[in-house]
Length: 325
Image 1 (cartoon, rainbow, N blue to C red):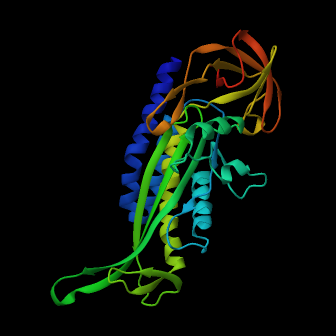
Image 2 (spheres, rainbow, N blue to C red; image 1 turned 120 degrees about the vertical axis):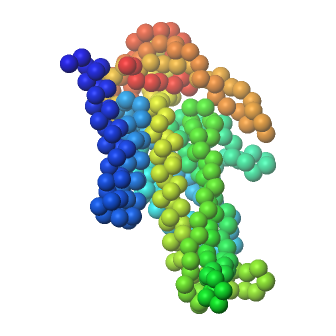
Image 3 (cartoon, rainbow, N blue to C red; image 1 turned 60 degrees about the vertical axis):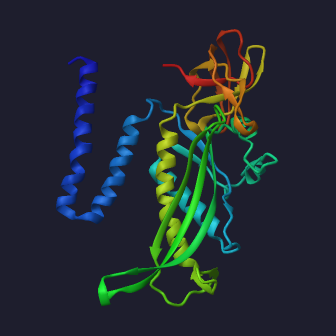
């Protein structure tokens, strides 16, 4: 059988499996299993659509700012741990650099910002390239509120307490400095407890109450799962890119190595990506350019690799690289 026809035949069978298996699971096992099956199906679709390459992408999780009134409770720390766990589970082809890793760069602990307070995307991308990153994830806990809703009909009406949390995230591409994802997530769950502990809030009447920290963490865990899946979808579908950090004569050094799957003898295409364009609010972005040559890897280390010019002339630091087909 022709190789292309065989590949198409296999993909059609996978697509049929993706479309119909969730319905079968729903009929047999019910909604809970269907929810888990839905996530599994989403991951299969993500892997199916992902670029055909063996290299892992490196993503850094920066500290999330806590802009709520509930500080000092470890909420953002717990949220990051849940987010990292989701990404690691959902995206096995992504290497996560998290704030609690040994040797976590100080640069990512305090991201560069403009005078307006906005993140300096250009400097973030430039440093991310030096660190061998494909993307940087950051965000903030925006709001935590408690509100009451009346549910039921006629004399069966009852008042229910809800805790609602809002978290936003931004995912920056180190290749261009642009945002790959900019989204706010809101989720609420019912708090069946009448008494709350340790965390104060002000309700709509101005009276002071308290919200249980474990309830807030439950809401944050749900948001982390949703956010992590979408970060996976966003990053996995981007083609892998590496960066040349130094060049001298025929030799080059790149900021990716054995951890992402690079091996001695690999050949990469080199592209100029040092052009800059200005956007709104004084933001600057890298402009992808044309192919300038090829390099061949000669020595590999955990977090970087060395190579030599294989073809072309204008190969220098700052150029991006892609696997040669």
